[in-house]
Image 1 (spheres, rainbow, N blue to C red):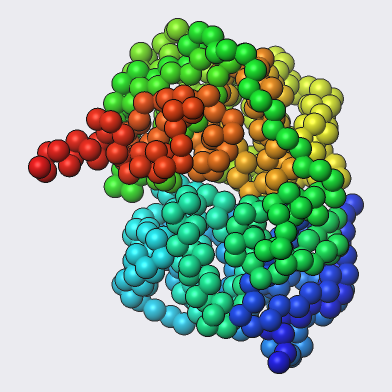
Image 2 (image 1 turned 90 degrees about the horizontal axis):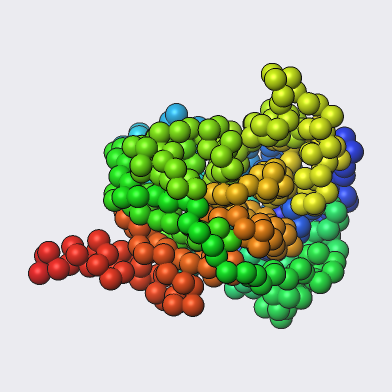
Length: 506
């Protein structure tokens, strides 16, 4: 039997870097093959070559035993190759159903597509409103759209680039059931993930990329998470430091804030929260339950009554992001490209977006900005040949490290972060978490929204949960466990909205 896909000596070079260096790799029908590597190891480039959106400089591709030259993603889809991208390939101003239609080779009515989106969403735990406009959706909801769109093409080869990065555990479990079923039906699955437990659970085989080359091929079920991490990094993985020091006075406070949503976006209702100096408060919850509104209120992107938000005891609810930055608050939004960073400008130019100290009396301090950019690259191990590279040219994980470094190295007194380690490898995640812990030790107040529940337990002092716009009390993590968080994610905390609804029905 021929391999479903065979890569021979695939090589791709970019200025200053060899992304793929003579890659030889096969995947059989019905096999789940994981591709593991650090951010910038060349994984996404390799997947884009297979999908036809990037052409290799050298090498050849065979599909079902036949030589193949893929000139476009449309051609790849027609052949039975589907891909879920790490950076979502969705049009913000179109609906979910319209975005799905663009990824199908056969024309279908919007009504038929909408019905199928609903059916697949209910079947696989990936519910999303087919009539919702994409710009209104959270990152987790956009991830569901990408996965559903890929499944609707009935692929022979399914490429998944970080498909679970912003999915909650319940959705991941259902997705894995689906992928195992597809594999039993003969679908080949190429799976990129930095979550080592997922690779051990899902994959039949795992190839490890380092600096663009395959350095190892193993059975992940015979490896531990630590041994996989060592293969990926080529050294011992870093350890996240323990919390140091007791929290001080309240620095950031939300006081009974209500901000209505829209038909598609969940608002927040009567939300109160405090974060103290030298403390990390983590917010858990299924994507789309009001986290976006909470972050926009806390950061100053959405304005409320002055007394609704307090910073160092002063009312700032009606002050925007720049005024709050001047008072010591920094914000890392969930969406990397287009919100946290502008893809078509250099890394150095991106530092001007929030680096108020890099502009003086209307003049840009270019040399200071260059040194600052190079410091970010060094401290956060951002893989890029130059500070003058476009932000959009970085891998997702490397861009995340750059954005986090840009804000953390400005030594904020208050830091608000949405999904701090989205799409980064285990070593980079430890680097980011250690930086947050150091900032906490220096007395900063930190508010973190994350769908990585393990991450919240690793770094947080207190944990709260969002459900349909309501926020639970923030309690010490010693009083919480995974089961309690899971129950609270359904609104079932003491006096929570789901419990009150049940009592009302009774």
